[in-house]
Length: 83
Image 1 (cartoon, one colour):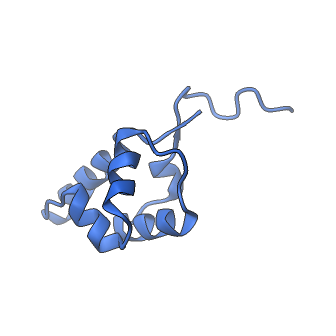
Image 2 (cartoon, helix red, strand yellow; image 1 turned 30 degrees about the vertical axis):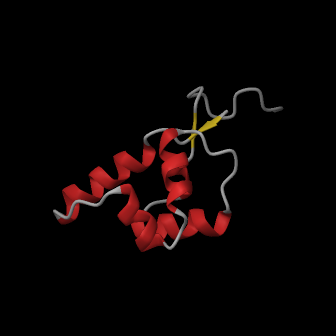
């Protein structure tokens, strides 16, 4: 299962440590030009789908990779995959 719970909060904290500038989730949504509801759902871990273009814009603004936002909830990469 893929989770996004609190990943945006963590990334915003890292950004603040680098730049000294504090951003809210609402400010992130505005800068990335994505719906604020999507940002809030991603951070809460309740998003059912993510538009790849929106994910790309978030990654560009946060200077991160998609894997920094999307994480396996079970913590085991590739578990259950056929070898």
